[in-house]
Image (tube, rainbow, N blue to C red; front, top):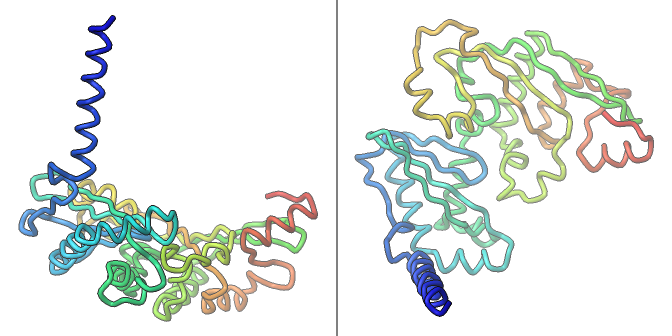
Length: 291
């Protein structure tokens, strides 16, 4: 019995030592940063994945280093349980491996206004119109053939219907969405780390636009997790339709151009409306109508 207790005590001691080593990063795992020359593709993900250009890879590596060097600051925010957001650095290496690290990043009001902070630099990447356009409409937004889509609409009593867009309407909506992206109107709903109230205002209406892509098109999240698959499958000669997909769009009242386009097309009216989650929930509780 005493032998077993001694063995158990020894096992616990070893575990505690290992945990302590990891906590202080004795092995250098947390601090490890890959060499730029070994990286084929780099992503950074705070609110959504951004695939950076090869020229920006050194910049992203510096951001990761800044996260490591500012560990104490970020941990102090993390321990308070608010004003932080996890950010991942994901690298697809030339040898076929994947290297990823994740850190809590301070997103206090002060940090978001500080041009030298990680949060400010990440937000600059996320609000870049080209990156935001890829997030909202798909990576191939410049070439995609948008041909259809739908929007769930509601009556004031909570009854729902689905409006299907024609090709012409889909293209009108795409133009309106692109204008809203250029004006920064989608930022409020796509960046929960920065705009913490944006999720409350966001419409609960399901909104999607379908497209035929060129060259195996993809959405940002799919590309983020499956880069090698898309790299190996990419083919500029692929036929339209073989790379079809759907852009599921999160938007809200600040997306004025999109809302106005829907109103002008008659999709929205005195009868059919857009509601955020709280508004729709309140209506359905009063009327007992569910989707």
